[in-house]
Image 1 (tube, rainbow, N blue to C red):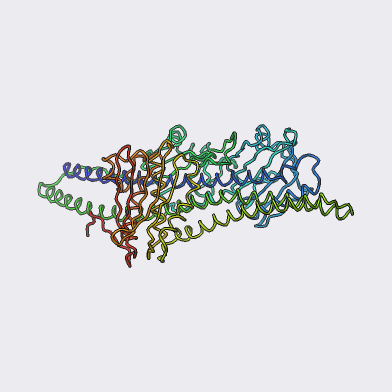
Image 2 (cartoon, rainbow, N blue to C red):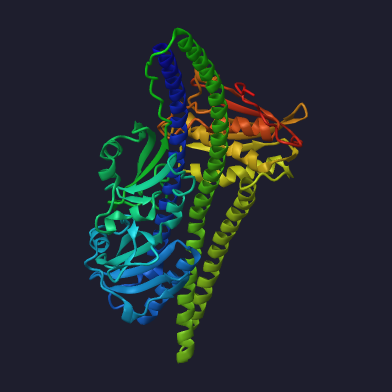
Length: 601
């Protein structure tokens, strides 16, 4: 009986070890996806703040500004809030902390707050901290619940405040521009996929208070008496999360992946990068997966030799059958996890495109708004002279010149915006589904490259397209775009890890009746030892450092299962890396279902 108990213990330990390794990779991948989601949200908020702060109507707001100037700024604030639903409040505060212009979103409607209802905020932390900065600097508040007149707003509005100082014409501090953003869309992602007792996606502040991913009575404990914290309920885990670099840790029968996110996201440096950033709003993304506990050894007991022998044989048979069942369940769980991760990767890719295109549109649209305001000022001057009967020829000439110049600039900017939207529209539609259609390969690859060009424009390595296949495919453009985006992103990330100069090129040609698509980079190359494993799930040279080991596995699955083609890589250290896709011009009628080589049944 003792021997049989030890045999069962060994089998249970081996099964637990295999499951733990698989869960570590899955947990890390899910956590990385949530980190990117939070970073994209914070990045979008920053861009919207600086558009408002740099608008001429905002710059004209100072002590003694006229009623017309305040009206003009209020209209700009209102239009901005109506266009961007995450904005819940736009305010300009003077150097004494008085609200001069304020626009609120209330019950879905954007309204200007009357002058009588404006408040003084000189004692609020966000005002004093922002006034200590220089124009162009950025202040980011902690993520908490919105408070108005000293009372927490109902229903709750999770809020992040971003602010920047504004200087008067003589350079003296004039006040601050502050935007409140509804962080609800960021937090909602942490409730998706949570399973009681199995999977937990959590967002916490720097003090260990839960902001998302737990029952409501545990949320935002920092704003209520006796609020609960992870720091108090699991101090050992919190100490690891708080004091360690991003990583994976096992605690109390669960595997946790964790990372701290600052409001200055990695790899998102742009024209909106502030000169200086002040914040105490660091957020912690934490993902946990429960590991099945092992069953303890069977206690020895008395009995005859025959009974013991029968029990040993029965136990061996049971362990063998249990191993088969366990393996089958593991395969099913792996397939389910892989399917979920593919969907997450697709939506993360689409989310990056959305955030990027929104940022790119900020510039032409912001310029158009600014120029439109300037043109309105010039027309107002002309109107005043007409009304007074003192219209001068110089005013007419100046107005016409300004209108001509402004119209040309606006048309160029809006044409650029229209081009961006056109490039993005079809890619977004294709990526959100897997609709089959006929499409020209070469221009489609140009559109895909254009849609991701902005994400790499600050890199030293440059992206180019040389597509001259002349092919028309009856296939799935969405999955194809995901493959190309993954390969290009992979090339920049792994081919040029230290942002070295070079090129990443996408090519297309016809050969043997098939379309051949290549993604080539002149980066550091791939070691021979890695090339045999490069398409394996969860294999990555950067696991735990932003690499989940799923990108190329997903690419391989899409190319072979969906597009009906093949993919292979040629590379060596210090030489160009070439990924080659051979795709039939007509995709298979049905998606192939690959069987796991270890499948039992």
